[in-house]
Image (cartoon, rainbow, N blue to C red; front, side, top):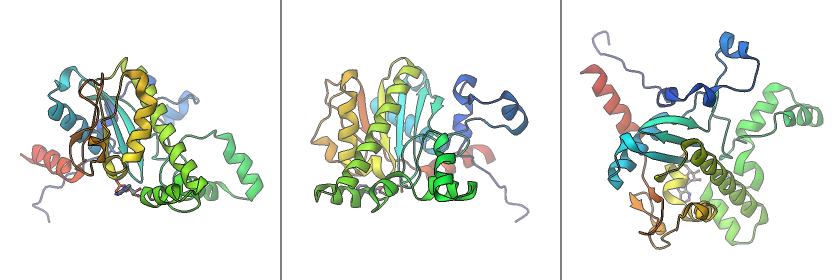
Length: 260
Ligand code: AMP
């Protein structure tokens, strides 16, 4: 198709505004210089779309706002967005860093890799396979990476399913807390993607941890599935909302803007 313009929309692009202090690892500097080892982040199309939509939906001025987006799907990441620009995000050089995910471990002590490699007689590829495909809530529960199954298990008294959900929510809450520090405050928080849009139990558990910010949950509103809705009470100091992501629409918009 020689006459058709081709556009690449990079999922890392939105995170390029992160300052050096957020994207550098505590590694020998030459790895950054020589191999470009740094934090890039992912789900950028979604974090960009949802942060803008949240500001619109709540009537906030995006250019004067502190927003945290929790993109919780099978892959999951959080971002801190100041005045419409990303200042930090939880995924790194690869999508393995950060939250506990469907099958990814997220943050771990890197020394675990050597310890388990010796115990299980695994090479680097074997370890990476475990961390990407056999860990997360799937590895913890031994049952499923899908929160519908985990909720079912939890309600039936399965302790490992319950632990998987608790570990997932606790990690999300800790990241949000650290991004409140990064932003020196927060105006609004959005939940998005498969879990964020549908799993009321996850939203409720995460918001319980955030009570110290003056956040209170509107339990009735939290019954929402896949539609835009404020789920904090009117007197909550920080607004919390479900904002369905739409990466396809965001990619279309970027494409139109570029080829026009
Ligand atoms: P995503 O990667 O954004 O498509 O999200 C997929 C994940 O969302 C699934 O693996 C489930 O864990 C979760 N999910 C989807 N629908 C529901 C639902 N109705 N209730 C709870 N979790 C859901």
